[in-house]
Amino acid sequence: MNDRLYSIAAPVRHRGLFTLCVSFILIALLASACGSSGGSSSSSGSSSSTIKLYMIPKFTGIPPFTQADQGAQQFAQQFGYQLSYGGPTSSSATQQVQFINNAVSKGYKGIFISADDPAAVTPALQRAQQNGVTVVSYDSDVLPAGRTAYVEGTSAQQIADIQLQMLGSQINYSGDFVILSAQATDSNQVLWNKLLVQDLQTNPKYKNMHLVTTINPPDDSTPTAVQYAQSVLKEYPSIKGIIAPTTIAVAAAAQVVKQEGVCNKYVVTGLGDPKQMESYVTSGCVKQFALWGFAREGQVAMCAMHAILTHQITGKQGDTYTCGNLGSFTVGAEGTVTAGPPTVFTKDNLDQYTF
Ligand code: RAM
Image (cartoon, rainbow, N blue to C red; front, top):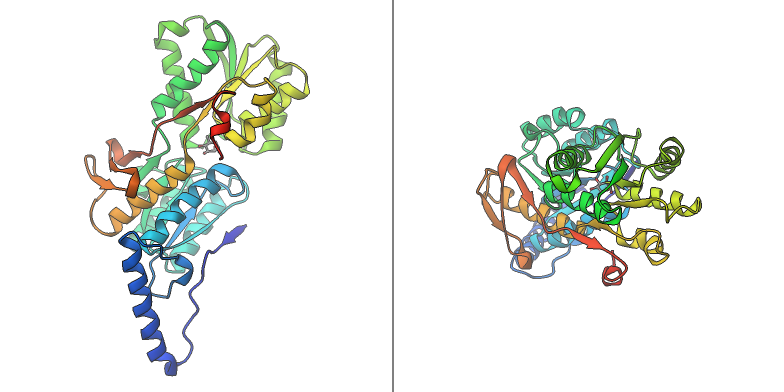
């Protein structure tokens, strides 16, 4: 398990240090006051009075979650919170529950989580809430009972539409395709795939496109996705393309079609990280894929947490809060906040993105 703490407040061991501690607390309070007024206080200078928050991704070690952490960290420093980041190294709801329980027992006051399995983590989150912990889900939602608000990177409906459009425009809106997704418990992919199917069935533009199957590998890891992408090409050789709504699977599918020398035969598209996809785009193997700013998603989630902790909002529909220079955000249906717009990447704009 990967459990990185940005800063750890040193425990106070001696009564004689009381005066010194009071001074530290005062300094910390001053620092946090400066931070919330736009200064540059750092969480690494925090004392034991600093409010501690914990961010748990689906799993650590991939760019989107690292970027969300960095975005959240930036605003945590401004607000004077201490933000820690840690989670399973590969998708595991059981391990996420351990991270939740540890955060509660260590006195964290807020938890951000992108769920590996909403049903499996929500009871632990409810216990956390009963202990006074505020929960904001991001990226992949938990059950509504387990959190106050959910911050999605971009609108789920737009993600579905864009993916169909990216594939359709490259195959003349005709032919079979496969969705190579992530594990079946990932609530974000499940929702996007459902909306995509609805779109496919109802929009006459897509009447000649046919989804052969949606594949849910047992996890969202590169070796597994590569293996499944290879099987897709073997099992369904006559498809026109693959839509992969995970940064892992879209890169894996691109790797497989490139290695097998079939870039001209199959369209690979979906949701990808620009840096991870760069070589496939510059070599012409992948023409289009989409994503949104995960750093922004982390920032908007941190601002939601701050607005809840400071009693500016309760997470009900219509609540609004501001987020520095990103402007103002409104809580929508079922406590959902949309962080920003999606971007479609092609060879023409890819070099503008550094993430
Ligand atoms: C992967 C994860 C994440 C998803 C992106 C698009 O990084 O599955 O949850 O939002 O892909």
